[in-house]
Image (cartoon, rainbow, N blue to C red; front, side, top):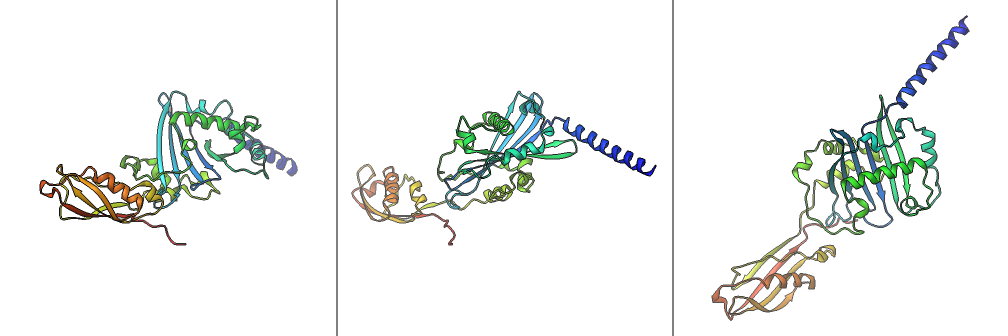
Length: 329
């Protein structure tokens, strides 16, 4: 009798567990988040972190993408955050396709992750999708190899292919992304706008709520995001003197990008003669790197001096300062 009761109890528990499993598998998520780390074998930076937030909207779905770029050079190209938003007339469930993410067997996902365990991979992407399956949170990972991205005969497995199609659709909606970036970044002095910093998603990002989508990555997106809010000082150009006359109309030289990239700074001193139009002519430099001299010459061409400077010689000195130096190793 006792044996029969135990068997019935086990069968009842198994049936309940199976029922719960089937219930979870039948749920089709209507919102999801994706973390994509795209990596290259050239840089720096070598990694780019993207976060996609897809939510149902009144007439389709809303998509928010955040690209977080690690610093290439802390002075020239610090960590950067770029935000893009879009709305599409396709529902978030439709974006996921006919396959219910909650019903995909874990064994199939693991098999795809192990398909090329000992292959040489120079570029690619690690993708993790987070969906809510009933009361359970599920993480679905896909490793996109360089051959999946560039070889038309790559034989990409089923679920990885579905992930790639989904990401392509999201990229098309929000515009150019990581794959459209230049191979080497040019110094950018832009700062994130205040309205972007008020975003709830960005607050959650800063708090580390999306770090779980990038487990095993070289960086934590939350740390990169916080670093991007503390930009290094901008380079400066300052007129130290202009003797014995100062210009009435004055344009500041621009700090040459190549000089910044080469960590060139210092003073550039020159002499010039003032003609009847108040223009500085016959510039001769006493000091300064050629790149700095060129920037000074371009600016001084537009200067205008007072009439009493006619036929006089002036001497002027500019200071170019990077105001930021790479930490010593």
